[in-house]
Image 1 (cartoon, rainbow, N blue to C red):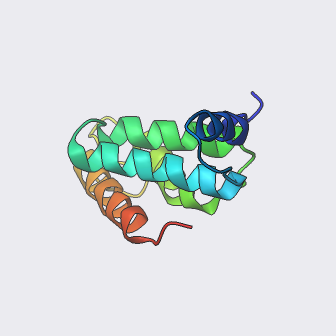
Image 2 (cartoon, rainbow, N blue to C red):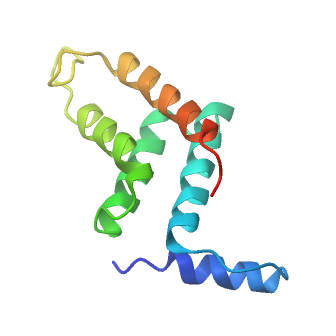
Length: 111
């Protein structure tokens, strides 16, 4: 799938009478929206990591802002019968890390 985020954000901004976003700025907007979703309860941690991982893969790993959520998605996607990841952590522990990463993303200054 071809990444069309910047073009779509640019179009939306033009229609709203605002400027253009770079690809990095568009990625940051998406990451911040995912982070808000996690912390507001709109997105479960697993939904957020899945979404971030899909964006990260679809953009050929171009945006570091998605990397940690991608790594957490990989871990959470491989739980054994006892409910532990390949690192021996529970799904709840991974979800706690997702929320911590969401807070970190939101603490970063917007570009």
